[in-house]
Length: 218
Image 1 (cartoon, rainbow, N blue to C red):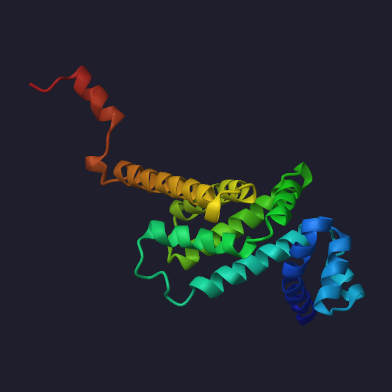
Image 2: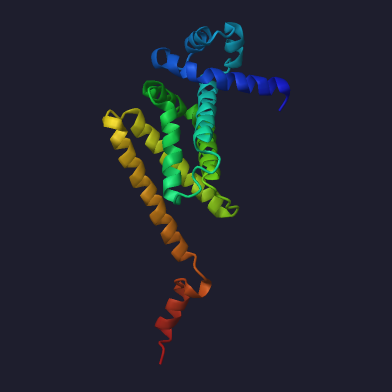
């Protein structure tokens, strides 16, 4: 990454929260960028250039800001003494806290990300968010578990975002309950998977079963 590219990336992430604030009223638009630049004291032309590729660039920058907020809140061993389900719950909730008060902007962002032309980019952003959560949670898997964990968490996080964006319950109780149920689902899945992947002589074997049916033990 060149210095110019890095500087542009930093500028986008710096301006992203103000764009999210403006997106509540103006959507993820050039008007939101102009409003954010004015509120931040940034050159309007430079801001417009940074986000010249449109709404998905703005949303990706906001996600980068959320990533940084999560990292600031929970890096440095804060999670080390917690059970894995609590680590994941806190990581997801740290991201939701970073979106608090901007639910309308979040809802509009989710609608844009769901557009057919944006599905691939959205999937990459979701995967990246899940990867960063698992890394902060201490995951070091390098086999297929690396991929399955991230795919499952990305799906759960995406579903929780949808609930959170429309949640009017006190202290987002409905979102908290939804997330807890989904995390419990992950734990049950991992437990079941570990049972299926025990030592070969302990696993259920269809071949062994059929053999016993055909040649019963005497």
